[in-house]
Image 1 (cartoon, rainbow, N blue to C red):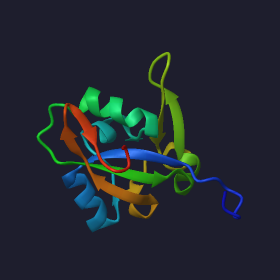
Image 2: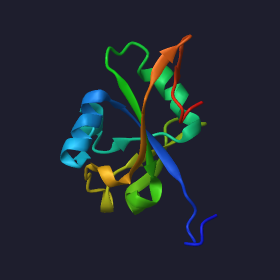
Image 3: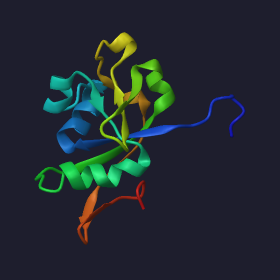
Image 4: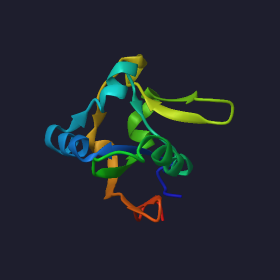
Length: 126
């Protein structure tokens, strides 16, 4: 534990290459069509990343990146919501549910995902 009194907590964003490039270029992103229509940025905890990839990204033609995000920098805009009986997923709404873009300065690492032996892999996951 660091001496600053807050524990490090990370959430993860699966981004297509275009989104990651937009984030670096503009300093923020509203995500993809799903994020814009639901008015929050979809995120995952570390233990949810692989299943999210398997469930939603198996047939993508896009290069994928896994972004590690400092949850503390998202503040109270980060809300956990139940997706089903056993899973609650982190969603980023922004302050007071206002739907603000995900800021680049919250991203602590970004790694390109590879797909090997029918599972996704990168150093953040391995």
